[in-house]
Image 1 (cartoon, rainbow, N blue to C red):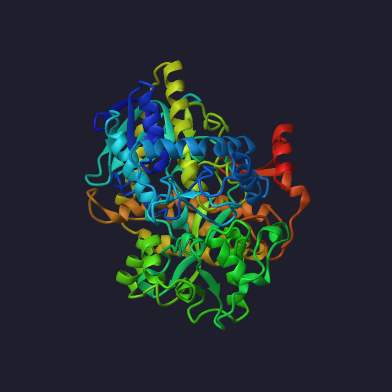
Image 2: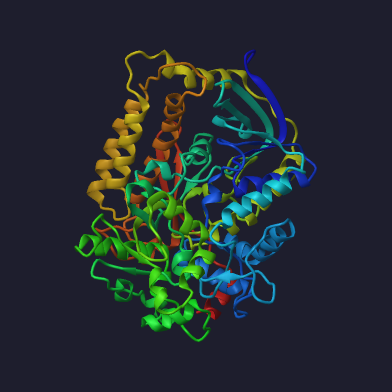
Length: 603
């Protein structure tokens, strides 16, 4: 402890993306001391890569939209495994959070009469996504940062959390190391908000940035919190598969929302071949009707390219497996075809999708106004995460809160596009508010020096080994295992093989060795990340084995149908007394009568 700096705050926020910034602003607004730790630089959060928009029932483009329709869409997209209270709060509060962001300076695209413009997106019945071209996440982070710098938040950049600290059953802070100098810091806090994002770096092909190593999930799990629905991983249907310079980079759903179509190698729009029964009355049956929908015709139905992400991703996989894919294992996403319908199509595309146009032109010399993109599914988002209370966002550990992608509940078995950004705003605020209230209502915490010393010694062990394996080979093997055996289409035998492989990788990671010193040592950083990646990979695999059905983002080739009995429970993961991972099935609380009536009313 003599060598470790201690910093005290009432509330500690871990993560500086949309959820973390909104939580910190909310907590600071309650008059408590707030500290924020971020793994990268402030402003570099993965939220900036969210392109399509913020889902909120403003009704600016189609006045038939309402919180009830948004609630029903979210529940249906999540296959009714959602935390219904979170889905209700999200649908009701998202419009206010968007207007609040606008009041803080966000520059949204506008309708002709000056209101916030909204676009179509997969799984949403009406145009609902407030957007800034295809740079919505970037504008959100810019706005939150500009507003937050006046709130008195103490920001610590390029710091990674090693472990959460506890005072009895209650969270007491975190042990952190700064990535530049390698020095340890203890953050003592009465409440902690986890806003660390997702787990995409457990897979080989992912749209996620390097920070997404499942840190919040693993930290909460080791602190005694419950994880939920970890089997539900979303593979975004349209990540670039060629050329190599852009492989894995996301092609926003906004491309399809503006008229982009999916074609196989024969040039046929294959999405018309497989429309789920519960979407048929909402989905166009011919290309002309789908085009009229994207142009704002309220009498038309949406094109099949805007079905839910899990369905579109599986249709792409089907085309590839049956030999109708593109040369590099994907399909074609074509928005250049609208030249046939719009005389100024190139200017229209560059205006609506500026980042997409410039990014692929500069990185791959692909002009999306003239040629199709070669796309395929890429690991994008995890619906599962830390189990939280729907109102307060507090986990099962007192004083430990979670918001954003690392928290479970809102999205159920599958997330609708655009719901992620409104999730960050709605539940980031709620987590910050309730964390501040918890800190104000509870006394000071005590940090155990022995726990700090033990965690610091564990973190430094890789430097002491001379005969261990390097961390990068282990990370690569983990990503290959998850990509090949626990990917978008799953089978029992393959996942059991993955479980055995993960056990071997855990043994290898326990003997990992690194060279050099503690200052900016990427090998050391990767060695510590491995601990979290292996934890979330095991949770995903065990949960996926246990759920013997196909639902939402979880597709079992050996159990392709839904099991009606499985629609009433969540898979939960706990750390047992012996440190082993334990699974259980817990019943979902029944939807109250007034919300059941809403679902019935919305069809």
